Amino acid sequence: MISVRHLLYGACLLAALPSVTVQAAAPSDERGANAMEIVFTVDDQSITASIDDTAAGRAFVDMLPLELELTDYGNGTEKVADLPGSLPGDDAPAGYQPGVGDITLFAPWGNLAIFRKDFGYARGLVKLGRFTASFDAIDRDGPVPVRISRASP
Image 1 (spheres, helix red, strand yellow):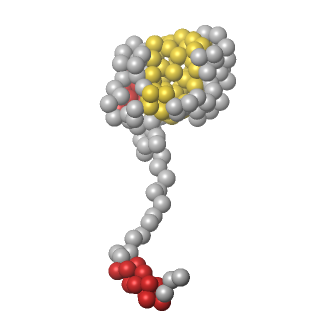
Image 2: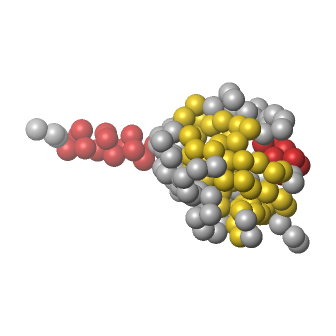
Image 3: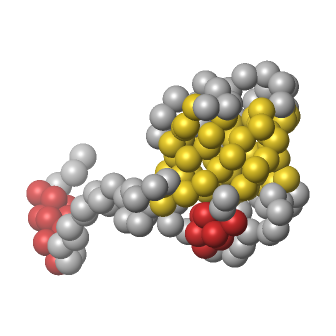
């Protein structure tokens, strides 16, 4: 049984502790304040996307315009294409868990990967951005030729 003396001792200990204020972390926009808008053109359809303000994202936008052929990979999970140069990944996390519509870099191979389906965490995957409009023209089986360019201001 707890005595009154033990209760008073515990209360004194608690009173002596410094007060701590706990605040929830403010939600952050992982794209950054300066997200860059780009356009994927498939046939005559324009599909907008937002590229994150990261070293890899900026380097990707600096490569534009690009003409690529996106091909199926991973049983239709993603569309991939080789890039004409490498992108920095030094400031990127070790990996990433992509979702539908994410535009990524698979750093070990240096290729662009667009996710058509949700996928588990993958080491070496760097998020570049995501589509801000329906990407049905890309989200189909078979090769898809695309032109990627900066959005007009």
